[in-house]
Each structure stands twice: as C-alpha cells, then as structure tokens.
Length: 141
Image 1 (tube, helix red, strand yellow):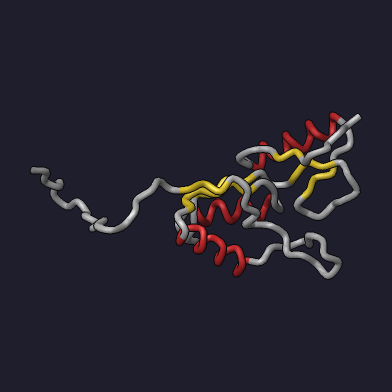
Image 2 (image 1 turned 30 degrees about the vertical axis):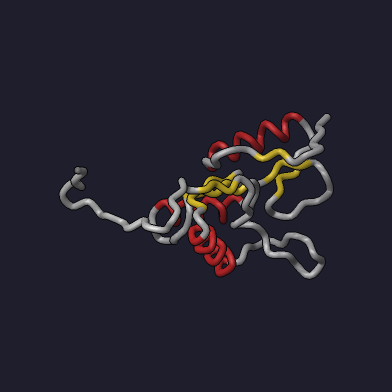
C-alpha cells in the first residue's frame, strides 16, 4: 500500500487526464496592436496580453516562446511573470525581429549590413533577450 508523504497535496484524478505542460513555440503575446493602416503599431494591449496568458494556462500551456515583440515591453512582461506579479505561463522572448525590408514597426530592427546585424545582436544580448529572431528572407550585403 502506498502512503502519501506528510503534507502532500492529493488530487483526485478519477475520470480525468493528466498531461505534461504544453509549450507554444510561436505566441506573440507582447505583440503590437494593429494600427489604422492594418500594420503593427507602436504599443501592445496589456488587457489582451493578460487575457491570452490566462487562456494559455486554462488550456495547459505552461511555457510560451514569443518570437518577436517590442523588446522593452516583452522584457517587462517576462519579468512580471517571473516575479508572480502577473499570472501566466513561463515566458521566453526574442525582442525585436531582425529584418532588412522597408517594414519598420517598433517590433522590428532594421538591419542592412553585417555590422548592423552584429550591433543589433550585441544590443539584444545586453537587453537579455532569450533568443534572436531573424526574419525570413534576411539578406545583408
């Protein structure tokens, strides 16, 4: 006969399912609000982000990888989650997306040369993002 350790929390799993926490590898939680032109704007919607975070948890997502956002906003959200000041999954962020097109909303870092790429990666490393996002089709000369 198995005996639970003293003080153990016992959950009745009868007729229920238990799975490991899910990971969403592409969730723009701290993403830009769409502006009047249908493009990412210069801010994110706190209420929407908090709603997303609660919904993720409700459906078993315990970790999120945000592959691009306004760096300062994403780092703030990551810190608030880590400190327990906001309820939601564990959060990893890339910060700004490296891109060399003319598409330049705040969540993107325009880079056109190897030096630009190196400088942006150094800046993001100092900012302490979790990983670097390079947009598809990035070609620097």
